[in-house]
Length: 469
Image (cartoon, rainbow, N blue to C red; front, side):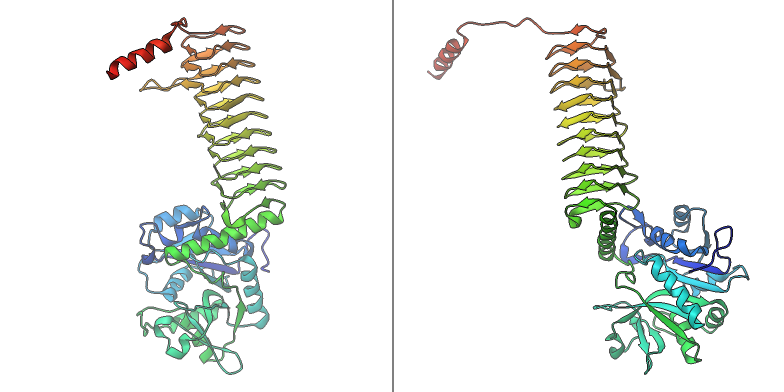
């Protein structure tokens, strides 16, 4: 482990994250390292992985530099690689102006989101213990295509890293690959960079040639075994999807270890940064995204989407879409509800079957059980909204509010034409169109007189027969 200073940073370790590439195979205007898996940028995962090392972080930017700088924030320094001339050149740029007290440099790719802090820490320790010029992470994978191959001498020492484009047929058969993740002794790195040339198939400065240079002069290079997942870089949409599926599995595994029941992890989609408390059951086909949090002992799903929403303890949300809301303890949502941004469901409240809400505050114990729309509405405590009731909150130009008081009872199929206030303990008659305020404890009813036409059925039947002649 790195030894941090009293301020929390290790002044002798620099961390260079290579994030300047365009990512042509992504076929996107978004810089490659800003593509997301599980709702979080690729480079964000790399920054999280290096954080425990507490080194001085530099992100080497190029394509989309301003966007990448904004995304990584002010916690680390961004260094511009104006012309991308290979990984070796990127490291040269990253070392410019580096604090002279730095004696160790970790280099890794900004598009490899699955690398773990534990492996990085092992690499630092391995290099120090061996007194080596460098340590590097390698992995053995079944399909090594597009990866640099690790060429070893008899006895196992690393001889070189050969890029795919420069490899012989025999070397392409090697399954041990380079991860583009290294820890260098700084002086050795600087000497190795000075010796680089562009005499290769790509016409670039290869950082891998620094390792080859070490081997040629007998400077030791140690390897640390990583997993096949950790070496996965994201270069196209297929690899992006693969990395996303792996990260989803990691997220689900962590949550299950913390006491969350996930019925079918392969059909559960939980974003990075989402919190789910113990005792909660997550059913299949659930999407929990954005800045969402789920409390204890909830039941979420099946077939539910929750985004940017806070859900307290003991809630149930089934077959529903909830976006930008606050769901308080014991609330019940669904099935087939849609809660749009700005809704707040109080404790023990309910938004039931086929209910839609927008910017609506539902008080403690109040219920909107089914087939209703509540928009720009404030509902007090202990109120009940009958089936088929809606707030008519939009006149084609402006939105208007509706208030339903504590203990009010809204009869089925009531149209509340906003702006309108329904008083405490008041009632609206079923089928009413309410356009005026209803005072506390009153009944608001609007109906035309019902008419009965005797023998209508016989007359209608006779009329149809006459038409058929």
